[in-house]
Length: 164
Ligand code: RP5
Image 1 (cartoon, helix red, strand yellow):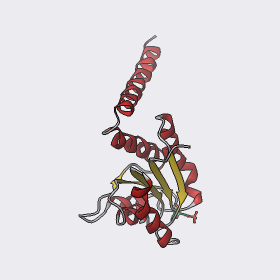
Image 2 (image 1 turned 180 degrees about the vertical axis):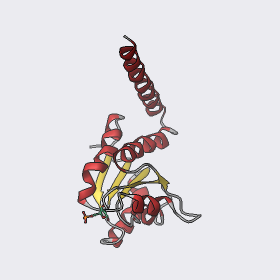
Image 3 (image 1 turned 30 degrees about the vertical axis):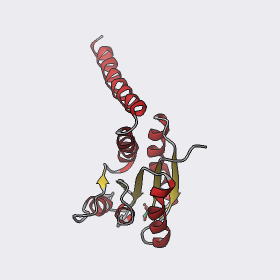
């Protein structure tokens, strides 16, 4: 198995169904990724170690998904210079607004790229990670262009059917 280029970390196993969307988006583009559970609150040492060791393991981008007071993406970003993409998850009774604000509102100096809530965000996190990696990978950049064209073609197909 090739060395994973993207680390997908989530706060709990219960986040897996949503965070798998990121892995799927990456696999569709032929990018190897690794998924694991680590929590900023329940296993802070594990989260720190994962972030600190990622660059030396060949990881290029970290995706971090969490719900409730979602500090995971920020905690990862605090311990690495790799780009970190945060996915806020809708797991609490506040329907994710808590996770969204916790993920997006990083103070100046330690950025987290926050994507949309839930499955759409997890998928976009995978695509955004691919776009970052594609800056130095022409073959991957071509795959991303093809995927965009395919998306547009599907919309055109729908419109053709609607008109007929
Ligand atoms: C967060 O708490 C996790 O990211 C998860 O979304 C949420 C609930 O976790 P569990 O209680 O289901 O383990 O830290």
